[in-house]
Image 1 (tube, rainbow, N blue to C red):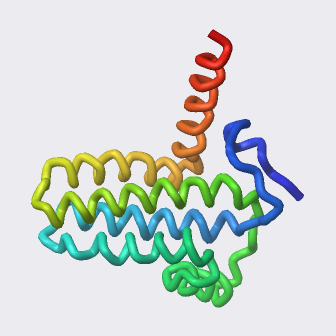
Image 2: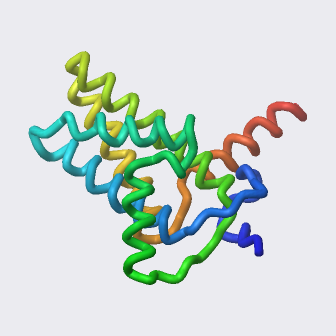
Length: 154
């Protein structure tokens, strides 16, 4: 039951599966948080996202408070599942974690322009995942692998 066609060929492939409806909802929540961070005075909101990404990356999706709430919502609403390979989503989660940490650090040290720059780039990437199902992190990973392989043979 693998559905790897939508991902870049060099993206991580895992034996684990994840509900794509859950990841899409998570992307919508993250998009909302980053949008609120970039357009409002509530800059502390990014710390919630960074903390949840850290939990997802280091402890797993099952420990994420946001994912648990979304899972309850999906169960209560009887939304049918659509399982996809978890590898690309884990890779994208690590990228999301890195970006939310960057936004947090840039905000703490007062580098507002850099924090907003990372936020706007994140909004574009998260928006493509949330609203179009396109994994920008996986695409970037594929391009990096091509570049690396080209340098290896030159």
